[in-house]
Length: 179
Image (tube, rainbow, N blue to C red; front, side, top):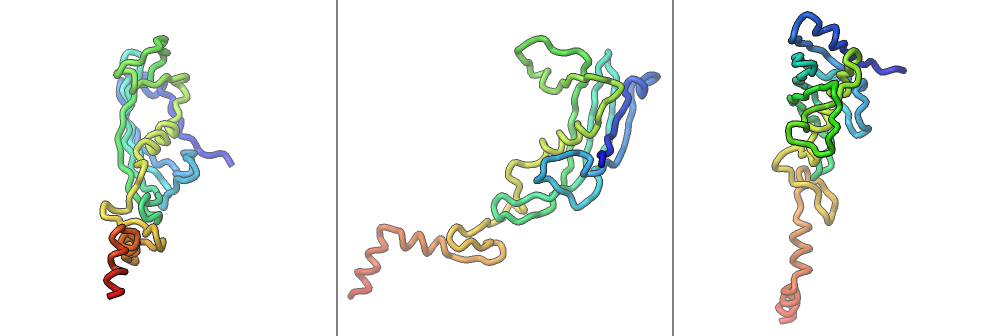
């Protein structure tokens, strides 16, 4: 089954005007994200603002979606709201220099202005906006390294007991017990 792509003909859309705004709902599965990405919602809401500037296109993208990720501490899945904005300059000119300048970091080469694939831009933004180590909450206590329980649901003191037993002073307790 072919996944639906959101393709814009920038040349035609901006033929008579220098600015357009588009809103759309892209099906989450059409973004071809890596396997670990999933969503409880079916769509990603996007707003595109495109300005034509001397043959280049300045694209601002706002996205709003939710994604299901795994907490880095407790390993439980949770839904995270994903709201983000980005801007990129789409240029029809390739850069021939080998040294990138700071202004070149937000410039992408536009191969075909009549076939601009919005899905690729949205996919990239979702990947960039997803934290490397997502947390279900800032106060997540994680997993006990001794018993393996989720400390948010079943608090334990296994680690404290283990520290006491492994302490060099633990031998003193045995001396006190003998008396």
